[in-house]
Amino acid sequence: APPPAAAPAQPQDPVKELALQIYVQIAGNVFKGQQPMPDPKAVAMMSFKLAEAFIQAHQQINAAIIAEAKKRSSFSFDDFDLGAGAKT
Image 1: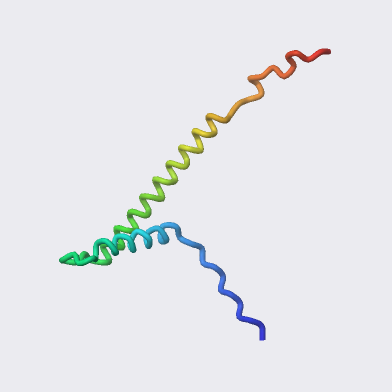
Image 2: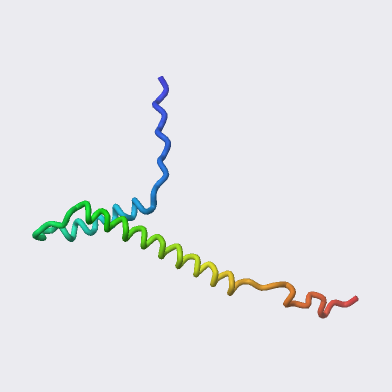
């Protein structure tokens, strides 16, 4: 019998992945003997909000960097006289 087909890979949700990392980090720090313990669901919600804010800021920063790079590297051949010095 042929081996079972691998399940198609699920697309990764960057917000969910980042929120999980944030949650694990916060949970590791917050739940160490703190009394009273914060609501885990509230920590999870905060993790998602932080992840969304980070990704939005990252996209804005990338857009600004790309726009600045295009501005600095763009030039036009109209600025050059390609016929200058040519002998006819």
